[in-house]
Length: 409
Image (cartoon, rainbow, N blue to C red; front, side, top):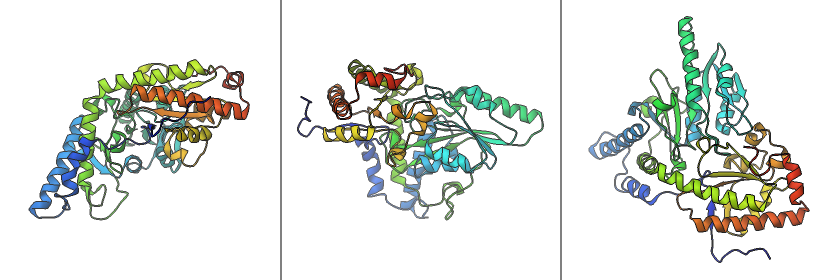
């Protein structure tokens, strides 16, 4: 008999889609939601206090990523920041096929070269740099993929971009070339030091690090000139008009400080939880496919992407929800439209494999008991679907085509 949901038991395992607001972040935001509510652009003393808080938050975020405060532009999330980065140039673009929809949509509107990714979801830095043409002005490669957890070789790409830039200067070319990386999914697990990354523009999101939603930032280095997408009062140095969210900026700075400060310990804990769940599921389903890089340093620690060939993820998600377990099927933006994952397609997974894919992400509140309960319920849900559809373990193995139990990594 299939295990039943414990009364009132809820296990959330979709932290790549959304993180809860950390109580310490809410505490930092509270004065600017209530007492210090003034418009930071107003001229009187109380408003100047709000402006001071906004600028402290900007300076704190800049310090955390090794940057200067005047390079930080606050936005309404990572999608806007990505759009703002693309608007800084008007020439050709190089990006990769596994990027977030917001990057790919921007690239589609331009003269773009979209390079592929390997079976592990990673970009070949040599291929990315070889795609740079005489008119290319922007290379955009995310720091970490939010669907399969692949950490991209941004530093290696940065070195290649720098070499092309130097060659252009030597040849007398004035065509600019910038490297942008969307680090929104990576900021809680990886260093986002801009000097180390070698990027010219970096996107960040508060919503992915237990901060407030609809708050993001784009950092730009010296020489990059932003072109505003939103016109009006000229806030954010003219780059982004609209009254700034002081509480949002303060919460963003507090959330990023907490994420970066406890990063090493939390990453080890999350990696252990992910491995525990992966091991439990692999022991039960020999035909399960685990997608993403094999090496730990190339993989986000708290993300597990698994596929059950021959089954439909949508049905599994519903069954798991009834049992109190919330998991994703990939990017929340794409999942809401129930379309085939462009990331898995770019990695070469067949429709039969990708259709049965779950993205499971652990977070700070996740416990070992949560993982054990989730494993039990996932096993039960998959077995229920296998009985309904007639799919056997042997069928899964055959549909996996040699990728079963992690071999696609």
